[in-house]
Image (cartoon, rainbow, N blue to C red; front, side, top):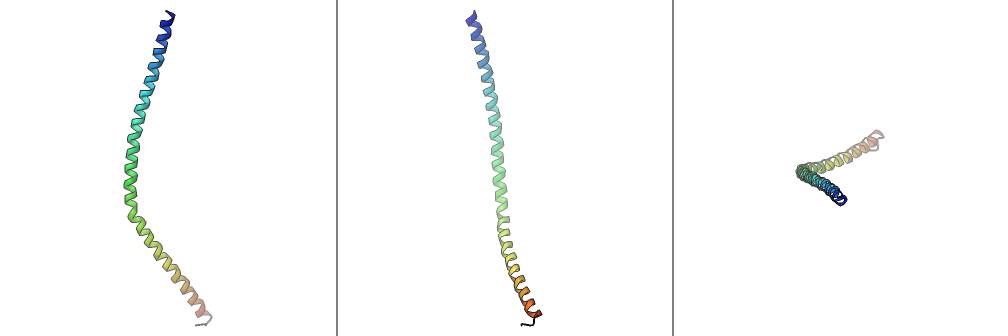
Length: 85
């Protein structure tokens, strides 16, 4: 009888472990669905960012040109103030 009780306890513990593993499997499946959706949204956002990155590169060129023009204008103004030109 003593052995029967041990087997029952072992069986109960194994059932609890099995339930826990089943719960983990369900959680893992849910997290995989969430991850797949996240990857999909991230890809969509990266695709939408591409034109903005191209536009930003163009703006950098314009800003660099304006900086050079401002420096040249400043130099010309200094030269004009001191009547060098």
